[in-house]
Image (cartoon, rainbow over all chains, first blue to last red; front, side, top):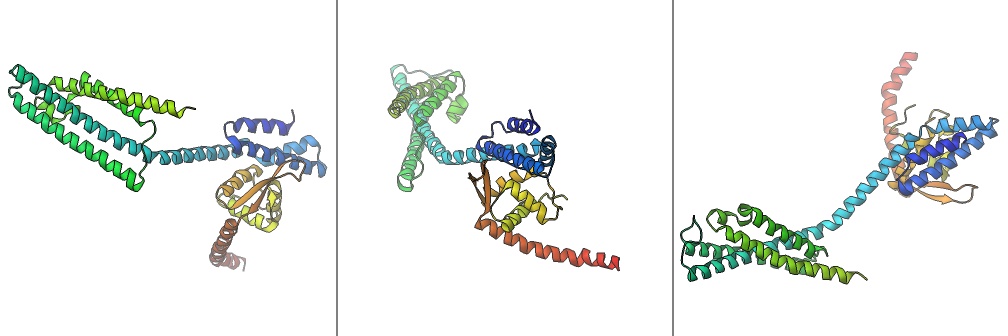
Length: 240
Length: 110
């Protein structure tokens, strides 16, 4: 193998995974070296010496491949950033929707929990748990929590709906029902395996009872199933 | 001579002088115009040309006139403007250097 071909092989290895920029650089390098060798031969140099001189003047392959690799990496970073910037409004929109749904879910679960406690208390009037003595107060607190969470959730959803409709705010990503279903399954799991303080807030400390966590988990799971089905149907519709 | 930081403007200037050219012709032109003072590693010219093209200062296309495919570079209007700005800056810089260093050098000679 002659000097120029060996040099081009080394450069080819250094330009691996640099795409069209790498191919272009390699083509330009080959053209440059062949022209330089032809000039050397025209000046009366033997071919082997003309090749050695052309390669020496061109410089080490790393001096060319390094900048090409760095340029390719920055181009990829810029492209990834552009993609991310394009998807960010949709992700924000989806997160907004999810937050509204979560609050509605919490409100619904406190409503169900409070209603259940009221029915049980009416049928069997006794303290609902060891540390709680006033079931009526707990029912009242759950009712208040249900109202607050439902109102906040519905407000969030309504404002988002208006924003999407009036200001053309980005719609949620198409995959959001599946993401919401997964989030609700996680919420259900967290409530069952011990996340009562975070999930229930102050109400857990004030004696809303462990059964409220199971009610929340049940409502979350019950919401996750239709969301997942909806997501699957949307995905199937998209496929040709 | 260390050309770091000056290569881009030298390439723009050479392209302006010799007109559209491929990389090898640009290097020969740069060497001849500088009377051999700017004898840089030739491979370093290509990343610089690609960088200038990404910045919109030069444009290029493959030429099929030669036996081998060659990438021909030419100045864009943005490149011409940048070169004009750099020339103005250089004149101010060179005049300042001349008044400080050049005068002392002349005094040393006298």
